[in-house]
Every structure is written in C-alpha cells, then in structure tokens.
Amino acid sequence: MPDTGIELGADLYQLWRAGREDLPAVADVYRTAARDLQRVQHDEDVWSGLQQQFGGILTGTAGQLDSAGRALCTAALEYAKADAVAAGELRRLTLAGER
Image (cartoon, rainbow, N blue to C red):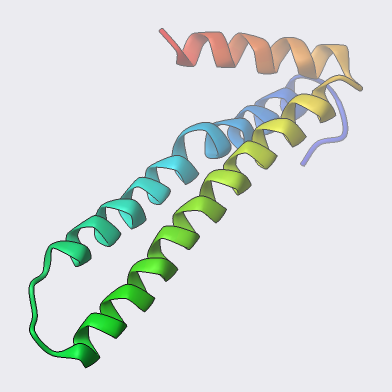
C-alpha cells in the first residue's frame, strides 16, 4: 500500500468497498444459509441439536462479518484523514461508485 497520495486513496477505496459491499454480501449468504437450515424439517433430536448449533454458528459468523465490514470502512476513513490527497481520491471514487 502506498504511503500517501492518489494511490493511497485508491487503496483506501478498495478497503472501504470491501467493508461496505463485499463483507456484507458474504454475511448475507451466511444469514440465508442459517434461515434455510431452520426450514429443514426432521424428527430426530440429534438433527435438531445440530441444526440449532450450526445455525448459531452461521448467524454468529454473519454478525462478525458485518462488524468486520464496519471496521474496514472506519479504518479507511480514519486513515484518509491523515492525507488530504488520499482523502480526496477516496471521496471521488466513493461518489463515482454510488452512481
């Protein structure tokens, strides 16, 4: 990662985008898997316990991915505060990505 300037801003944008888009998308996959798992009907107690345990793991992982995504966004924005050129490039790329 470059230390300053436009290149740093571009790298920070990639970090921010991973936090804003990529990790939340993966978290949604885990949440969907947890919901789908709960819809599976089975009469055995062993399956029911496994279903609950694995569903909890999937849901917990989704929450951790959401938290990690927020942390990446915060890190990118905080890092950009130290470099006006990088911050400008991050802002430009962020706005361009929202169009």
